[in-house]
Image 1: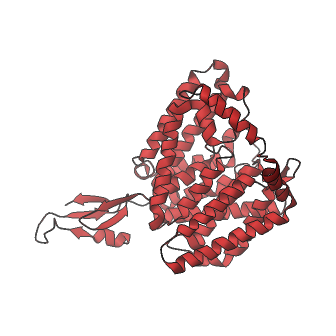
Image 2: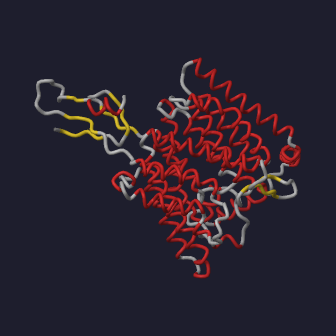
Length: 419
């Protein structure tokens, strides 16, 4: 039902002769300046590592654009800072636990702890604002489009050698201070956003079909150049979730063919890449996971020593290698006390993405969230803006308010008032 029809929908207490009536009222929509500031921020995220002549990480390109966006969002505080969702409060509990355990550590760790705390607070605020803006379908579509365009641009620049870097003895591709695994994760989310715009959502973009396969090819080639096994596995599972779209055979066939072609392209390119072949051989023949096969058992053993409160946000770092796993990192830092609220917040986002399968966004939030969850099995991304953007998208995609007497379901921004 369109916004115009929603505004005109009237119920008269079940009796057309009654003088009391309830009407659906649409709230003010995001101002164009707010939407475009948010789109500019989304576009800047993949380019956060661009050298702008300032060495401090406090003033990266993405952060500067982000500060401008938050300032612009204050033009509509009733919209951008509307009542937070339940998942937000679980993440707040996690941050409070992070802060409390960090303060209880020895003062020598404060210099490392405080920047992490400030970053986590900023990320959760970004999650809150993004969730509220993504209550509007137009903002969601614009966000996916800006994300796809930005990441395709990043891949093109890397292919031409303008921003690319090589890592390790396998000469794997990275870009803008992103290691190959993080770079591959960013590219994978861009590819999923592109597929979502072209084929995944209920309202597909027909104009995007013209550039879909060339852009898909560019992203696939760049993803393979990173030789990231974890991101490739995450992307493969995420692509398969598109098969859950709709119930009609015709739609499933259309999406299924697209997914199979995309997977076939990735597999073929991976086979032709000597670097990727060697890394997969080390995995299947030698059981090598880049050292993670030794790190994970040690991290788990350390967690079992202090399962409730963990070792603190910083204290364990000197005695143990980075876990390279978000879930293990949260467990070892804060124990179950901090991990449970964090995982609960992520669970609400996953549940929302699952519920959204029959909505306007269809399986796109589920696909992107699946990729994000699996990527975090080999890297830690909760300090990345894209992590929280995807969580906000997943949570907002299924946010509906049901009006039984009207027999309709409408986006949460609409409210029912009596006249």
